[in-house]
Image (cartoon, rainbow, N blue to C red; front, side, top):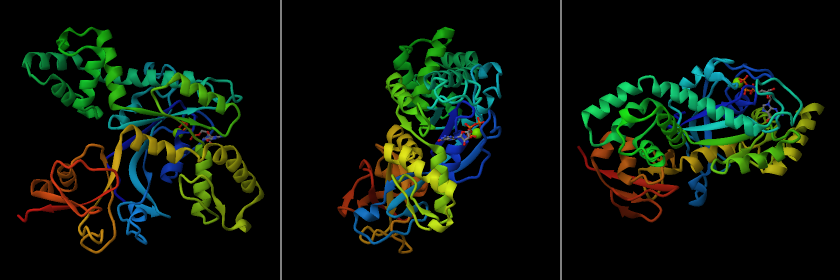
Length: 408
Ligand SMILES: Nc1nc2c(ncn2[C@@H]2O[C@H](COP(=O)(O)OP(=O)(O)OP(=O)(O)O)[C@@H](O)[C@H]2O)c(=O)[nH]1
Ligand SMILES: [Mg+2]
């Protein structure tokens, strides 16, 4: 299955449940263990955004999802995910596994910062009594390490970059800068925002002080690598209070309560056909009680009481949705060939769905599907209203669109 271009990076202190979250979201089998530094090499997989499928809204009986899944009317739209090694304070100075492995995340569009909301792991990731360590501090140090990593990477050849751009006297400095930083998925709009925020617009790059460069890097990180804090291990005592504190302390960042271990259990049992559960549901149903042993039955009871009833879900799906739909502001569009039957050339109903940034136009969608289609674009048809729309029509969430192009 083809995933969209979006890459979600999973980052955090060591031993907080990053790999558990990743395994639950992607169903890729990875090593999980209650000790620091279990993960060394990055894990790459495909997770899903969950959205009501348009076929339900259109009153169609079913769809023929092909680049995604449709589970009980929920369209599961693939996005790429990456789980990397864990951090400890001082990682940028080489402590723990260092922070060089963050290089794998250069291309990440959004970050899930997983924290142990129960405070049951020390700063070094050693298991301790719940409530011992403060997850607020955890968020602060992980962000600090992330910024240090970015600073180290960008400052490496900064003076050369600054000299080249200053001496070339280009008019579009943010564009030129973005080009040099594109390896970090930093785009012009991010640079513009960071320059504005730091008041560095118009200042010659070669005249920036080290402090100014640091400020710029923090601002450009905020713009280009937005975060969602995942307050994991919410099933453990003390986590609920910490969730409140995290929200108060980081008002600008969404905080999603989660229990990755619960989601992993539910998915495993669902895959085995023992329970019925669609990722993101607020409850499950036992289908085959005879295959449930006493221990698992008890665990399921705890998941239901401590997690699902209290938070409306395990939070794994919610975190991905928040990252992609909330933070990145992606919308879903369904390209079709027949706007009356909502089918492709082969008669399949709503086979494809694409995630595109809010503000994308009909013509940009055509380009996204195929360069040829973008170049020969004539007009589009909004399949809901059957109305013709022009190239600059701004797509709406859940639009079903036929693109009409000239024959070449
Ligand atoms: N109670 C509880 N335990 C969890 C949860 N999620 C993960 N764990 C446990 O936390 C421990 C660490 O999990 P991992 O997923 O290996 O953590 P990690 O962050 O990938 O750790 P490293 O790769 O070693 O940095 C394991 O014992 C998991 O079972 C959760 O939601 N609740
Ligand atoms: Mg891990």
